[in-house]
Image (cartoon, rainbow, N blue to C red; front, side):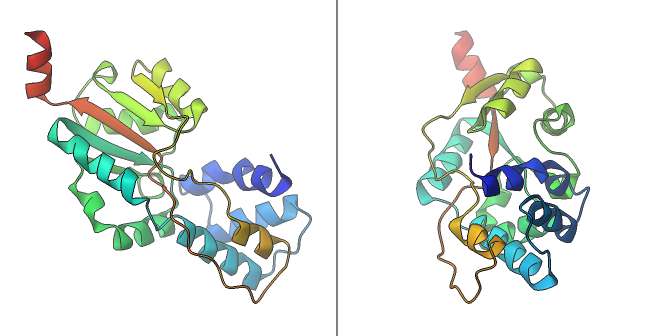
Length: 204
C-alpha cells in the first residue's frame, strides 16, 4: 500500500459516517503526507473524490438491478454526505432499491455493527436472512460476525473504489491537470434478502 492510499483510508471512517467535515478529513490526509493543507488543495481533492464516486460501472449497475426480480435489495455504502448527493443526482435509478443506507446521511459506516442493524431493521428481517456482498474482506467478516451470510467479491463486478491518480497528483501539489473521468463503484456493500416467493420455492 502506497503512502497516499494509507493516508486516504486511515481517517476515512469518521468522514464516511459524517463525524468530520471534508476540510477536516483532507487536512488530516495531507498532514499524514507532510503536505500543506491549503483551502484550494482541499477543495480540489474533495471534488476529485466526488467525481471518482459518481460514475458507476454499467455491468455492476445491471447486475444490481437484476437482483430486484428475486430478492429485496438494500445498498449499504460508505460514502460522505456530499458524495451521496452527487451520486444520487448522477444515478437516480438507485432509488429503485428497497433501501439505501448511505453512511454520510445515516451517520453509520461499515464495518460497525450499527450499519448492518440499520439495514436489517429497515427490511424487517433477521441477519441470517441476508447475504452481504462486498469487496472489502473486513466488512464481510463483520457481517458474518453479526450472523449474516457473507460473500467477499475478490473479482470485482466493477472497478473498486480506490484513491485515483488525480488524488495523488493534487496531494503532491501538482495543479493545472485535467482529471480523467473513470467509472467506479461506490455502492460498497449490497444486502440481499430473498423474497418470500424465492424462500417458498426453496422449501418445496
